[in-house]
Image (cartoon, rainbow, N blue to C red; front, top):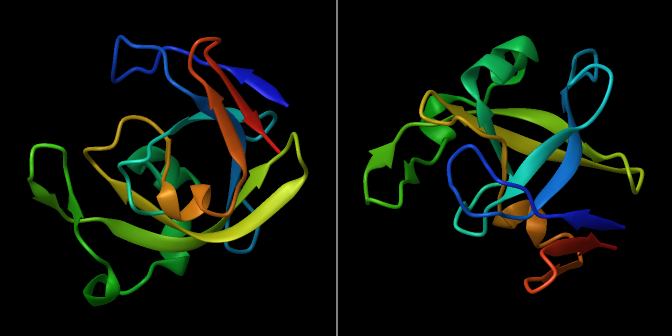
Length: 137
C-alpha cells in the first residue's frame, strides 16, 4: 500500500508517515479511538515508538510502565540526554492487519508520534524519494 509523504509539525520538509493505531497493554484503550493516526518514520530514533505525554496518559500506559532504572535515556540530535518513560503496549498497522507488542516511549519533549528503528527493522519498507511515497509490504 502506497502512502504519500506529508509535512510533519516538526519540519517544513515533506516526510514519510504510516497510519497506525496504538493500544495499551490490555487493549482496553486505543488511540485514536475511531480511526488511524499518521506516525512519522524516524530512522534516527532507536526505539519502537515514541508518543507525546498526553497520548501516553490518555492510553493509561502508566499501569504497564517499565521501572525507570530499566529504561535507557535518549539522546537528541543536539546531543542532549533526556529521560524517557516507557511502557508495554501494542501498535497496529490497520492497512495490513498487523499488530506488534512493543515498548512505547514518551517524554514531555515529544510533540509528534515517531516510529523508530526497532519497529522499522521488523518491516519491509520502500521509500520512493522522487515520488514522495512510502510502500509498506
